[in-house]
Length: 102
Image 1: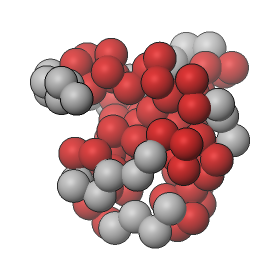
Image 2: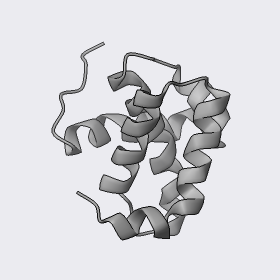
Image 3: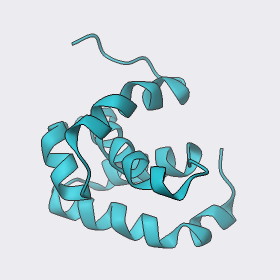
């Protein structure tokens, strides 16, 4: 879980989630899931935050039933598809969900 102050401290990253979600035409539920996932699994290292943001957005869309391809999310967030591919399953399991088997 995250603290309310995390939203303030991570405002720049949350703005990037919103911008990427807008590019991907994601709904409110997917955006909310992405923000919650990002803040709940916030990495300590600054250089890891962009990849975590992308994986959170991918999983948030997936959980909300608004699937987007890893390539589309990667393009919208400025990371490689491989960055998302490496992180999304661990992220989904870290928050207590079961990753799909496809």
